Every structure is written in structure tokens, then in C-alpha cells.
Image (cartoon, rainbow, N blue to C red; front, side, top):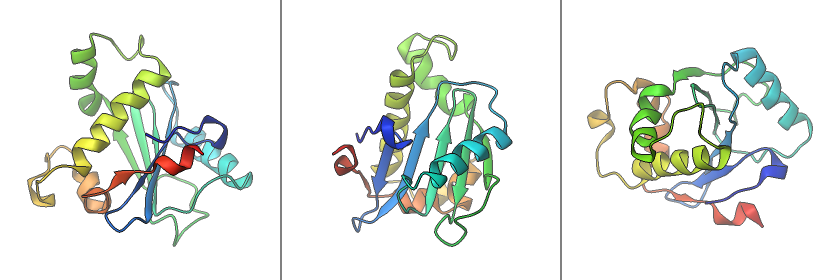
Length: 156
């Protein structure tokens, strides 16, 4: 799992061909608006520390924001998708015996890494994905992650 807190992102994933496909910023903040998330992303971009990847996912305990096709639209301000994180995180939180109010940033990052790992190593086709996650397939992220791996070099 690539961890790079100074760079503004916490996880990164390469696709099955070794190309960087997703960077993820995990934040413990709740009730972050799309405008706040967009401003935070813009701040990362302004400092030139954002790696070029087609997808950028900002994770909060209550909401995910996904920017898709960021290479074609690097200046896109608002997220392409706003996702309710609770149904995704709930099974992991229950297993860990914690609530979103109690979870640490590092624990949230581990949960996100586990969830992304399940997607990367799944043998399900895009059509068989949980119907409550249409954004995952619609955005192309599911297929982009399939067969991928965590980018361990980003931490260096």
C-alpha cells in the first residue's frame, strides 16, 4: 500500500499494464461538500504534486468524490461522481467494531485499500457488480482496476 501523506494522496493503483490509473486521498473529515473537495483537489494540483492518473478518488467516512477522465479534463473542478460512502464502508466498520466517528485516518485508509483490493482481485465481470454501485462501472473505474495492483513505488 503506497502511503505518501506529504504528497496529498494516500493510495495509488496501477492497472494490469503497469500504468497509474487511480490516486486516492483519504481524509477523516465528515460533511465535506463537493466544493470543499474540489478546492482541496485544486490545492493539490496547484502545488504540482498530483501524479497524472485518469481517476482521482477523495474518500471521507461519509462520502466519496470521484473525478473521472482527469487526464482529458485536468482542470475539471467539480467531482464527476458524489457517492454515499456508508453502504460501502458499513460492512468493514462492523467487522472492525467501530463507527465512522471512531475510525482513525489510518484505519480508514486500510479499509479503502481492502475495498479496492477486492475490486482489483475480483473475478466478477462489470455486469455482476453490486447494482448499488453503478458509478463504479459507469465511470470505467471497475474495469480500470480489474487485475491492477497497488503502486508501492509512490511511497519512495
